[in-house]
Image (tube, rainbow, N blue to C red; front, side):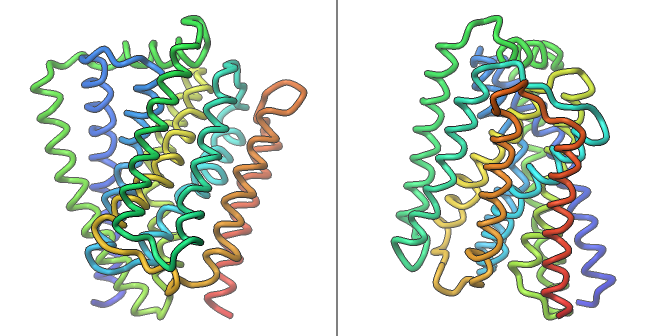
Length: 330
């Protein structure tokens, strides 16, 4: 496949992923509303899953094609993009992000802890096995119950609870059958989009002699993170900053536990064969951005992600991408 054809495949794949992901998010939120799932759980878990659906489907497709670096690079790169690119753009160009909810701090800590689980499994064995994949999904279920306990302790007037409630009430109240139909149709479109994206990304990697890891960390990771950009931007425009942070927290949790866990169940992910840059550079960048965001948001003073902090996050992300570019050209 030539570069033009591969680029066309990527564009078609990204278009299908972005369009179908938006409908998929609305349908999952609507179904959660129909079943009276608590707003916080819906916002973080259900919508978090929905916004991470492109990453999950791309990870599955990459695992089927035995593109292990692409699958793992997609998960790590998406976490980096969620913080550096999405929150950076949102805070710098739209509005400073002011966190009003005390619950966000607890939820952020849970997300931070989940990041260590797949890394511990990678270090313990030479691969992420089927067994490890089930452990990651079990941890996801446990995280769900922890979030449920946190939700039970939150006052109904807490900003994160009230904001998610308002957002869900604004959703189109479709009947269950219609919502499930939309869900299934757009899940199929997600699968098709992921197939096109992976085929095009792999073809470009082979043509330009770039590793699958690099493609996963850049084109694929940024492309599959576009639904999170749309969701966070919409939340900020509605003056619901806690939802913007909640979207990132929920998505990053799913990236670590589901986007890595489900492909591992399909096929062993041999860590020993991975590009060593993943541990030396990329995972270190992911943890650095996660810690920096925590310091920015939960410092002793007012909890606020200013335009200056947003500029720092975006500049760091751009610098990271440029460093990868230098590695390719060098």
